[in-house]
Amino acid sequence: MKRTFNLLLLFCMSIPVFAQQVEFTEYDLDNGLHVILHQDNTVPVATVGVMYHVGSKDETEGRTGFAHFFEHLLFEGTKNIERGEWFNIVAANGGSNNANTSQDRTFYYETFPSNAIEIGLWMESERMLHPIINQIGVDTQNEVVKEEKRSRIDNAPYGKVAYATGINKHLFKKHPYKNSVIGTMDDLNAAQLDEFIAFFEKFYGPNNATLVVAGNFEKNEMKKMVQDYFGSIKSKPEVKRVNIKEDPIKETIVKTEYDSNIQIPLKVHVYRIPGMSHRDSYVMSMISSILTDGKSSRLYKRMVDDEKVALQVLAFPRPMEDYGTYVMGALPMGDTPLDKLAEIMDDEVEKLRTELISEREFQKLQNKFENRFVSSNSSIQGIASSLATYNVLYGDTDLINEEIEIYRSITREEIQEVAQKYLQENKRLDLDYLPESDKEQK
Image (cartoon, rainbow, N blue to C red):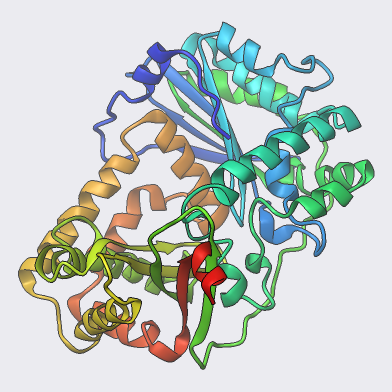
């Protein structure tokens, strides 16, 4: 969901925060709400965010899409915020807000000029305490989600790859990661109002949430406001976490997907990797960078620049809490067969598996991750998101300062070992992503 207001505020939100060390205070309220405060009085804004530990993996089979649906539904209104007024209140106070959902969590946030930050606390406490969940809101947001699905997935070129709807269903047979975050319209259409209410009651308690406030405020005053707005909200029964193990992939999964929105096919290899907090997941991020991060990456230089067999290459890890996926692929130039692209991708992977990267390439890699780490914490809004994410999904808020040490400690030998461990032909999905016209010609 993308709703933004006030260009001046957006400019303020992007003001660089040059301090490398992010100082913060964290504690729990009696109701179980985890609170993280990052005070920075050098900026004119502050962000209030609440991350709930609920995502698409927590949904019931046959009722996919609930977590993402709530990302929309909980802007409908509350006991004290009239329907349709949420965004008007934010805009009238010079603020911006947004929300997003993944397989593992849902994050809501507002950024205001610092003298209006109490409004953000009030609005998020309203969302947690007594939102209005009724049939009018469900029907309205159902149409919004349908349009989002059409624009981002159904009618978007390569949408099934970009949003993993054409990938995860092949890699996961047991774990709910097999389902799309946006869900299916059939599931949402079939859901009854009491099911939406029950979903809220199960997952939207303070003891399943982390509140983060980052920016210009006084810590003691903020602690009092947090207690005033959130302290009286009652905790809910503890959420039982998903604990489903996938069987290892032992044979290549060969599949074909079709897309009516494309004319150029795509060759994709996808590997299942460990969850985001596993050290090997960090190494895989580095491997991804080596292969296709920028025009100096190995696959880009060879396939696009030198041999001119590809229009573009791609590779990115999708880190998730329980498992992750690593996607790599290429768009062919002209009549280049997809098998040729696969051959070159495998050849470059084999080099990583059998040869140490050079000291020069390794230093370049380290520099890139240093810069990426600094950039992720270069705005108040970015810091708020990082603090919440590290706490909820990694269980370690200190990673906002310490994660770079993990990357610094990764060795060339470790990169080779992890490539050997996960980038095996018999442990992957081999996907041909083709124009719909190819299917019709068969």
